[in-house]
Length: 236
Image 1 (cartoon, rainbow, N blue to C red):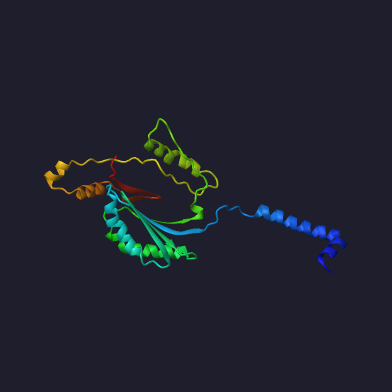
Image 2: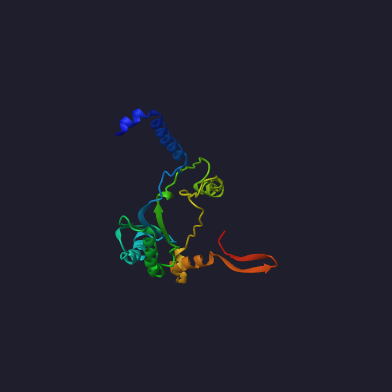
């Protein structure tokens, strides 16, 4: 007996069966988790290195970008490599073939980069090796502007007040701040003074970096309390 004849002969049973399907569908709809962005990797790994001292793009490419490219050129299953050299910053983006386990790819990239890390100039800061996923895409972007405050003041307000309040909201996983300008100390070097004392500019930069530090120098234990001692040497 085919289904149409069975449905017409037993209408009550047919209605109950379809009602059960609808009920199960409604229950499943409310119980399914909402995930607009599946946690899928873009298949790219970025290596970002910032260099102190305002080094021009040509020197950044020679001293930082090219050594990194040579060290990472043998990474397995790499599809393409893109490098960007600009003043004080070097970015190398590695694109991998589809279906590659990005966790193992990131591990290999870190191992390859560790071989060339000590060959980078002293002015190079700690590198950032980032693997972007769909979950890293921001769900909301807020822009903060002001007609009375400077970009440094706006950045400070956002970092110290706005960011902390948003992070306390239930369900917020991470908050990142971009743009604006952080407060910096500009050092103007007298060129005649460098010639007079036969000092290269690199030595001045190294001396400033060596004295602008904030280090943990020890600890003191008293009964149940432990006090950390820090050497405060950052420029005010």
